[in-house]
Length: 204
Image (cartoon, rainbow, N blue to C red; front, side):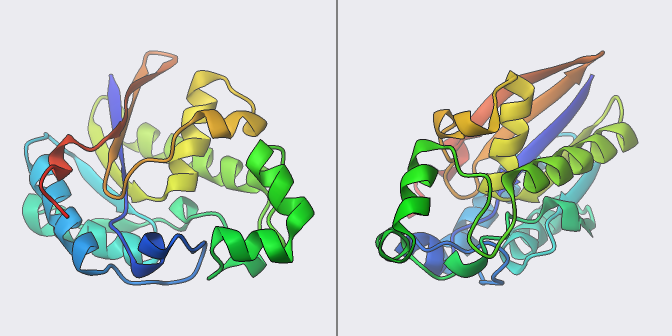
């Protein structure tokens, strides 16, 4: 059995303000740093063989906390980057709705294929699954942690559950530093935990 623990990065100011980040390299805020420490303590109790991270700053800072607690060196993995939201970067939902009303309506309904000036969801899904397969193959029979982003986690969960991209509104976004666990059991992928945030209790 192979286990991959997907950890969403800690909070940034743009997370708190409800702004799209995409490939913008925003640092963790004070809450995000505290969340990362709580995540690291949680993962220190696991028998983890390897630590991977998106190469974006907010994920790398989260992985640094895990690295200090576990002694594992974080391996930067561009395939784990968040979706490129293009022209939406820095906008909140209200601003996006004003600038791109037709797109925003379709996005709320789950039928959007791409972001204005950005990446297609199918491209995100393909690279997320490719990164997942590489990590799982490399650590077959073991456990690895992948620090990444909400878009990556939801794309992989959709695949595991056999859902179409347009059904992603059915997958709740996880809190910052939550854990989602996928197991490869022989030829079957199993969702073991979704958006587990028990380790964040007491973190503001």
